[in-house]
Amino acid sequence: MANRKLTFLQMFDLNFGFFGVQIAYALQSANISRIFATLGADPHQLSFFWILPPLMGMIVQPLIGKWSDRTWCAMGRRKPYLLIGAIVAVLVMLLLPNAGNFGLSTAYVFLGLNAAMWFGLFSLIFLDTSINVAMQPFKMMVGDMVSEEQKGTAYSIQSFLCNAGSLVGYLFPIFFTWIGIANTAPSGMIPASVKWSFYCGAAVLILCVLYTFLRVKEMPPKEYAEFHKIQPSDEEPASFLKCLVKAPRTFWTVSLVQFFCWAAFLLLWTYTNGAIASTCWHTSDVASAEYQAAGNWVGVLFAVEAVGAMLWALVIPRFSTLKRAYLVSLLLGAAGFASVYFISNQYLLFISFLLIGVAWGAMLALPFTLVTNALRDHIGTYLGLFNCAICLPQIVAAASGGVILRCLGGSQAAMMLVAAAALLLAAASTSIIKEK
Image 1: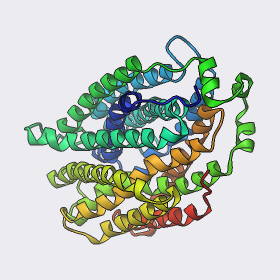
Image 2: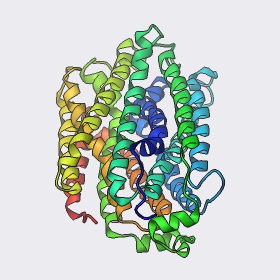
Image 3: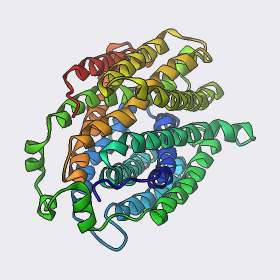
């Protein structure tokens, strides 16, 4: 049983739901700053809206990992959480883009935020949390069901589907604008092109997740123990503290690299819209057609990023070691971030985002391959804790983003230089990783 091999189709089925989940994640990352700016948020407030979602992730993800390690039922081990997360995400995706439609925009101002922004903020919390609840089981199921020899292939399939989903999600707004759906709206309301993007993303999400849910059968406890060459007692509940104390060195070193990586990408998601609106469209008026056009172009650029990630996935296996692939990927990504500051032509930005996509592709596949290869038991708990290396840097970047922006004179484009510096630190940190 330990030599159990999966076919390509089985690994594809295992990961296919990730395609739909990533559409939702792409819509969130490309449009949240645009949505809150449209609802009336000041540029210095934008990073504030990104603090609570990763904070919730730090709380929820370790719990989901620990609980799913202990869940053995008729539906499976990880699949129940996958389905619950997807259902909640769908409901929130139907509500979030309508934050400006409930007559709340100018009423009930609290702590400098109007009621529509508060509604959007809590919707974002639930959306990010539910997306992560739906996303994590895919990573855990690969750890559960795929041999060490096949994990590289399985995570590559997951990375491809992830970036393909991103491509679709990023292009939804400009596609709906192209077919004639309005890309502007009255002050304080979200354009219809964005609303329809979220509606369609929700539909694709639930269909893809149901496909994986129905096609994949998880291993029962005895078969799982035989496959991983462990005793059932090894999988008995362990405290988070005990798991952290026993965590392999790879867990910590890769977490350090991820800290700098995710801080950089949080800045990207928060400030790209305002950055290219000022550098390429020469506007900061969120109600203008130019600003909304820049919002659509952000989706195109993020789609280019996804293409870069998919193409780079074909290059990564050619490196002699995963560690070297990680280093080169992050250095190229840093160059892409830095170039955004200097480019004022919207089409030349394709080069920048292809390079950013190189870093993104490496971030999606390499860390989980490195970490799961170093783990023997409590995979769900460890991956839940590893998610803190994704959430914590986003919290730090979000909390400090407004302060840094003020120090840079309010230039959202200059925040791309800060992101580039973070990726350089990540690249330097790869030197301490030891591959198992």
